[in-house]
Amino acid sequence: MKYNIKTISIALSLGCLSLVQNSIAQTKVNPPFRVTAESFADLQILRYQVPGFNELNLQQKKLAYYLSEAALSGRDIIYDQSGKYNLLVRKTIENIYSTYKGDRKTADWQKFKTYAGRFWFSNGMHHHYGNEKFIPEHSYSYFTKLVLNSNLKGFPINKAETIPAFLNRLRPLIFDPKFQPKLVDQSPNIDNVTASSNNFYENVSQKEVEDYYSKFDTKGQAPSWGLNTKLLKQNGKIVEKTWKIGGMYGPAIERIVYWLEKAIPVAENAKQKDALQKLVKYYRSGDLKDFDEYSIAWVNDTESRLDVVNGFIEVYKDAIGKKGSFESVVSLKDMEATKRLEAIAKEAQWFEDNSPLMPEHKKKTVKGITAKAITVIMESGDAAPATPIGINLPNANWIRQDHGSKSVSLTNIVHAYNLSSTNSGVLDEFVFDPAVKARIREYGNLSSDLHTDMHECIGHASGQINPGIDNPEKTLKNYSSTLEEARADLVALYYVMDTKLIEIGVMPSLEVGKAEYDSYIMNSLITQLTRLKQGANLEEAHMRNRQLNAMWVYEK
Image 1 (cartoon, rainbow, N blue to C red):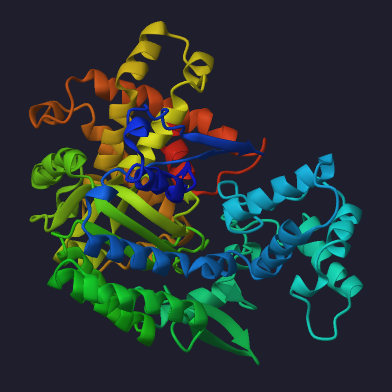
Image 2 (cartoon, rainbow, N blue to C red):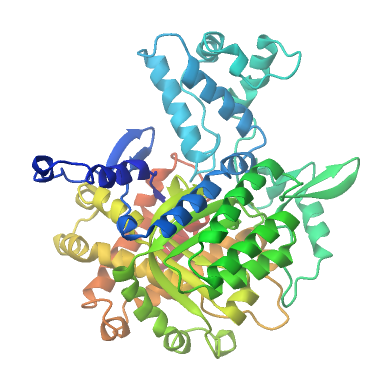
């Protein structure tokens, strides 16, 4: 994941303005696109462009718009999933930000703005990487002043609740570091469910959760039980609240479905239309078998220029890896950059056959790996503002084995990230050897792209579980996500020094592989730690996986 935030409206408005410029204005050279925006706390906000959007026809642009609105309609869901009190705090922050009548030039106001920015960026009150709760740097007394000098009718106050009572209710939520201290706590020898502050469970222990789901059949083509529900105890009985129309998050999902149904008539082809219809069916029923049917239809749509991920997808925010966070990514195919991924995907069987896996873990026939580079149009939920740079879906192992998967690289996101890091000074600070520094400068962007491509396209899509062995989230529990990411990274690292990549034309020499080894070790052991507070534990799955791999090498 990288620090990125969307400014699509700016990028698109520049293109629209060019249509009405007069002949004199048209001769004026546009200034270079500025990728960096504001910085605050430990965040650098980036902008990205959407090349290729103006090439779309009107029907495709309508489709992109409807899918983008569907994506944005899930905003409240990710906040609530990330913490029971996040919507309460967010509405309070936004009312202050919009209506505060006091002095906005003071140091305390800047501290409030920083807190608000961090809250919006993290979709809640916990750091997006470290998972620890962050606290405003201004005092509670100043917060009281902010509330009293804002529109009091705009706050989410309970019926008959006074302002002092409202402030007392908010105080521990915002200012007490011991109240819900970590979003995800994967520390060993504790109850990871009760120690985590997400809103996937309530009044249940980890053992109760595991016992509840142990009764479900998880063999063969069984659904990913629990993916789209909250598990809680009511009146002494454990129940599930399903995320669907008529269920939990019903109003938000109704808006998502409204826009998806607008998108269906302007779908590019029959397969895309079928996938969208199945997605709507799933949101209405909440039945995970319907979600699997949608996932299969989505994998089979390989011809559309536009694509969308929308649903409860990744389980990283759940300490025991069961509950899916809402996310959506709307994209268009990057035709030129896709050639590199297609060259890799074409050789998927060769990579599988020649991998160092035990023979029984190799797929005899690799099916349906669709690899492409995409240009992101819109991201929301768990995919924003801290965006992935690569995606491989679906996550269900049986669908991947029987029907295949889609692996994508988010090229305009990667491009923005590469531009921002060019003059960051990291290489000068952390690389001692001039030859290594020169190699990373020359090949670092390509090596990073190749690693992402191999990680998503070959890594996640490789291998198979032994017959009779249950799903990893059940057998590996809170280690499942980290070990899966580590496995995918190791596949990429294994092949990035293979001349096969030169043979198929995706890299010029093994110097690219060496650059990736240098960068990977440096990032895993040192530079990724700058995203965390000193002394903090690694909790995010990708960060844990990188250090797991690199520390093994270091200790050897």
